[in-house]
Image 1 (cartoon, rainbow, N blue to C red):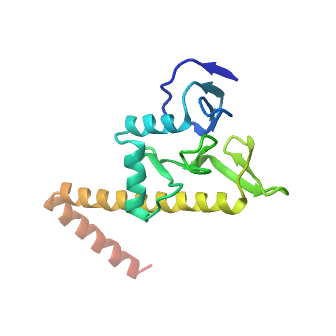
Image 2: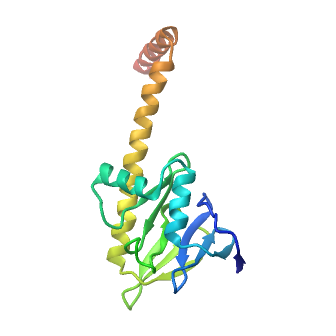
Image 3: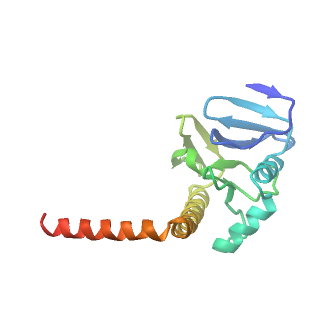
Length: 187
């Protein structure tokens, strides 16, 4: 494991987890191909990353509340363009809060002592001090947020496509659609 002096880490597509140190002052970053520690708190990294992608942690948390009504342990859409969503294992204000990337969780299972083992996309396993029920609630909330936001983004894209499509293009599309319907009658 490498220890980095820099404090300006930005969450990206390779980031699997943000793991706080015991004192909560530094963070071990798990990426798909490396693991390193930086001198910054997980919540600060989350906020800096949200800001890098045009909002803030508070802004994204407020957005989650507006979209789904979740106010505690909110999943966060870090970067909408790259579909990067993270969720906390406990209250984000607690120094032992771990942040997990939704898209990098390949598998999870309960242990005999009421903890959860997570298998990441690179097949690394990590033991979490969280019950399977709490983990699954957070995991499913994040999936719900991803689905709702993907739907909204796609709806807006369809509206934009309609605006950008010229009336001439629309005529050709209607003719093409009619042509396809006629061919399907004979198949």
